[in-house]
Image (cartoon, rainbow, N blue to C red; front, side):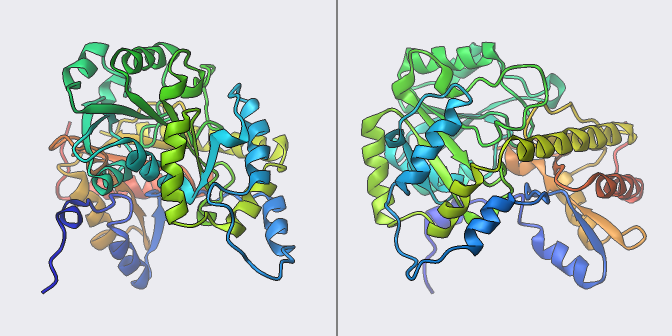
Length: 400
């Protein structure tokens, strides 16, 4: 029998995708499934991107440079300038999605056994990338009762030891929708500076901020410019999850040089994806405004609807298009699976992501789910109604 590696044994199943077989079986039975589990926007990709793909007239679909097409990177410089992030094309490396940017950041900056401090709940695949790199995630817990705000600096310092090499944040946050304040970002900056850490900052949702609070990028933090690695992606910004185009951005030449070795080993990022992504930069303000306004309406629809259901609570997310909600259930893993395998109301059910998969602390998030508001409002309203019926019928319901 082939031996499975320890890495393979430790790799967690995705809380976002692990219930997909149950959803497929429900659909096969004729049940309509409302997908609230995954951040796959249903809004249209910019027409300029689709047109760019259709008009490709190359005779050969060749490798692109390992760092990505220079024309695209130069165009991104102007994009980031709009957010007061001042870069050169050489600061930007194009990756196969934001996922590859995270993985290559870890591989380039961390040795096996090195530790990364990550506020939880956190995007579940961070753990998978850390395991791939042999690194260790140490989580600092934020709570739904406190709106997922960061704990005091002392809580971070309790985790820092000789193996600590980095802090990783997602801002605005997936899965909670939390937006870090200037005070919190300055707190992180001071820790990075004091202990000479790397700050990995996943900022793929910067377009989706719904409060008057400013967007504070890690690239805005003075005094740690050489310590910052910015992670980005076009997947959610332009509804282009399938083209697999992300970016790794840093002013640190040594980190870029190390990352490039991994980029060269995988040859090149997707050619056609870069063509689409570069064209998308011409989509214009009207496209982004329409997308933004739609998510504002969906957020209100979802949060108002959730908090009207007896026993359910969700704080108001300030960014991205997710929320974490607490439910009156004994175990959200069991409940989410039950919704797909044993429940339907008028031929419909809901598919949510159990929040336990976004925590590493044992038993954390056991009564919480992550919900993505990526469906149109009529479908969201219906999904909320079906969720309420599911909670009324669930054998493991917990009465408040």
